[in-house]
Amino acid sequence: MGKTVVVCSGKGGTGKTMFVSNIGAMLAKRGHKVCVLDMDTGLRNLDLYLGLENNVVYDVADVLSGVCRIKQALVKHKSFPGLYFMAASPKPDEGEFTPLHLKVLCDKLNMKFDYVIVDCPAGLDDGLAIATGGADQVIMVITPEYSSVRDAEAVTSNLVEQKMNKIHYILNKVNVDLVREGYELSLEDLPEVIRRRLIGIIKDDRDIHISTNLGMPAVFQPDTYIYNNFYKIAGRIEKL
Ligand SMILES: Nc1ncnc2c1ncn2[C@@H]1O[C@H](COP(=O)(O)OP(=O)(O)OP(=O)(O)O)[C@@H](O)[C@H]1O
Ligand SMILES: [Mg+2]
Image (cartoon, rainbow, N blue to C red; front, top):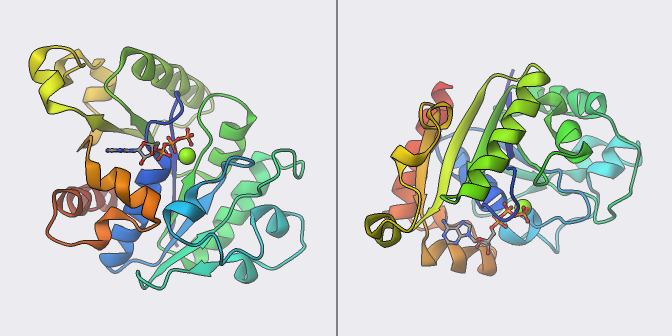
């Protein structure tokens, strides 16, 4: 039986979709069978970051409304054996889905996959509650800005109220020069609760930016900073 890991954030644009595409690809490279599931309904991007936008026939709304079977909505990634993708619906108001729908879907996917990694919409609205419906673990992606940290704390409180306590954090888009000059939050500036549960720090990196535009996860290229960093983060996720 696999695990469902939901990737979320308080603030938008922190790097959730980038993280899902790369950690999904890396876990597949480490020998796992992985499904990355886009739940950012209406604002989907994961298909683009994986270069699979032309391969999507059915999406998660089709599965949840019974238009197709799970198997028909899964797209296999050619460059990463073991990595599968299910797209979000492009229509923001499609379906009246509940957290229970997601729980049932994730439980079914977990029978076939070692990891189901869910890409969440930013913020605190219904999209978060639905996307975390089947969560075993949550990873919150934050950036070194007060606004991002404060919003992450708000989402954390909301999840804890929903009895989700397995929450870990990724600090993304770190600019080492700015930290050194004192213009960006450093590790010491993070709230204790976040610092204790940090499972990765990712630099602001040109290759990541290029790779999301090219539609190929940056971890495709071995022996790079990104590859080695995601390799270690994937190892920590395996132990959660
Ligand atoms: N470590 C990084 N270095 C450089 N660019 C990055 C990094 N992480 C993400 N980006 C860039 O930041 C932008 C936003 O990333 P992404 O789409 O993954 O964020 P998101 O949290 O999914 O956004 P949204 O809340 O809109 O869904 C993208 O252009 C991506 O290439
Ligand atoms: Mg996104």
